[in-house]
Each structure stands twice: as structure tokens, then as C-alpha cells.
Length: 130
Image 1: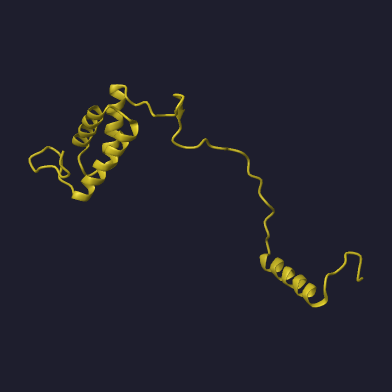
Image 2: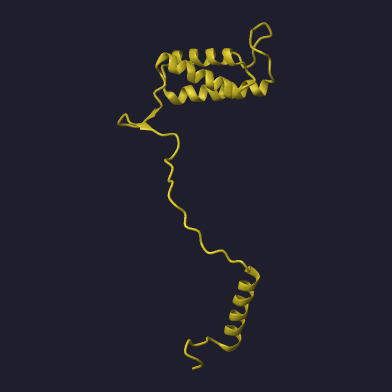
């Protein structure tokens, strides 16, 4: 398998970088599935030939179709044989909004004046001066 298709093949000639990206992505996916070596390579070559070198997403879609046709799309399994999801489950809880500060400059000025008073005169007791 060469990195750039020959000019006489039926795949459209793209740039060498696009071809390498598509090839690498498909081969990494096949490797992660832990398929039998030659069967995985055959499926990767078929998907790259069908999709062409310019689109990695088309090559991946074609590879998934081929895996489904051959019954090899098992997904990722853990040690006990259970399916591992490729993304975490969504938490669709309710978010409670905080009250909106409509005058942030006023709040910032109040905090500044309280801090300034505390630094200048010392802590202020809640029931008056000490």
C-alpha cells in the first residue's frame, strides 16, 4: 500500500497531505477495533478506494458501512464485554439562575467603600461601635 495513489487508479488525486490524513485516520480506527490484521487492512483499503483520498470523513463513513455489512462493528468493549460509550451521558438537569446584578458599577463601588472604611477605621460591629 503506497501513501499516494498512482495516476492510473480510479481515485481522484488529492494533495499528499490529505491522502496521508485520510489513510492514517482510517488505519487508526481499524487498529482501535482490534480486528484480525489482514481483514482490517482489507476493509481500510476498500474504504479508501471507494471514498477517495481527499475526504477523511467520507472514508470513515465508508469504513463504518463496510464494518456494518460484515458484522464487525462491535464498538469498544471493556474487560467484561460491555459496550463503552464514546461520550459521557448527558445530564439534563434544571439550572437555577442567580439574580442578575443590574447595576454592577454600584455594587463594585459599595464593596470598595466598605473595604476602604474597614481598612481606615477598623472592623465595624453590627450593633454599633465598640
